[in-house]
Length: 385
Image (cartoon, rainbow, N blue to C red):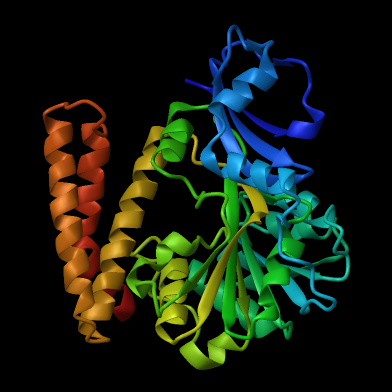
C-alpha cells in the first residue's frame, strides 16, 4: 500500500490535502515554526483529507505534544546557535547511482551554508557517469577511490580534507536546508565526537518501502539525546543514529582509529561501519548527540528483494561486530547481546512460522535469522580479504 509523505508546519496548514489517487494514507512530518518536532499517520479517502488539522492533532505523537507545550510555555525548543561553528566538509560516498546523487547534490547546494565544502567519493565505479555529473556543480569536489567498500571511501574522505568536522550522508539521501547547521551547533562540548540526526523517508511508494519504515527505518525519534558511555552501553550505539546522517569530529580518528574497512557495503559484512564507529567513540569515553532537527530524507529500497538483502545485511553486520568485540577486544558483554539476539530472533521466527498476529512475514524473519548466524564467520572472512 503506497503512502503519501507530507511535510507540514502547524502554523501554515492548508485547509485540506489532495494526494494522487491510490494513496490510502499519509506519513506526515510535523513542524512548529519550521522545526521538525513529530510525526503523524493519517488515513486518506481517495487520496484526500478535508479535516486535516483535526486529523493531525488526533494522530500526532507524544514528541509533537511535548514540543507544542514547550512553545506554549515560552521555553526554548532548540539549542542556541554558537557564535562560531567548526569548519566542515560534507562527504557523499557513492557508486553508480547518479539519479540519486544528483538529487542529493541539488539539496546540499541549496543549503544556506555556502562556505562549507562538498566532497563526492566515487567508490569503485563501473563508469565515469558520476564524474561527469559532478562537473556540472562547480562547488563539488570529485575524488575517485578504486578500492571497493563504503568504509574505504569514508576513510579516503577523512584523508582528503582538513576540516574540523566531516558530515557524512548517502547518495540516496536529500538533506533538509538546516541539516548541516543543526549538526554543527552540537560540537560546542569538547567531549562530543559525533552528532547524528533524524531521517525521514523520501517516498513510500511500494510495500517494501512501507515495510522498512514500519520496521524502524532510520528515524530515532524527535527528542534530542546525549549518549555517554557512563550511562549508555556502547554495544547499543546503533540507537544513536546511522551513517546516512552523521557528523564526526576529525580529531576522534587519531584517538579511536579510522573506520573498519572489513565492515559495510562493498564487503562480505554488508553494513555496520557506522555502528562500529559510534560504538568505539562511546567506548573511548566520548559523547554522541542525536539532534532530530538535523533532518534529512532517504529513498528506501523499492523492491522486496532489495529490502530482504538490506535486512539480511544489517543482521550480518550486527553479529559481525559482536564477534569482533568478543574475539579481538575481549569484551564479554557481547556474549549477553548475542544470547539476547538469539532468543529474540528465535521467538520471532517461531511466531512468523505460526503466523501469529503482528509477527513479521516468514521470509523477513528467516532472512534476519540467517544473517545473524553467519555474521561472525563473515567478519573474519572480510578481514582476510
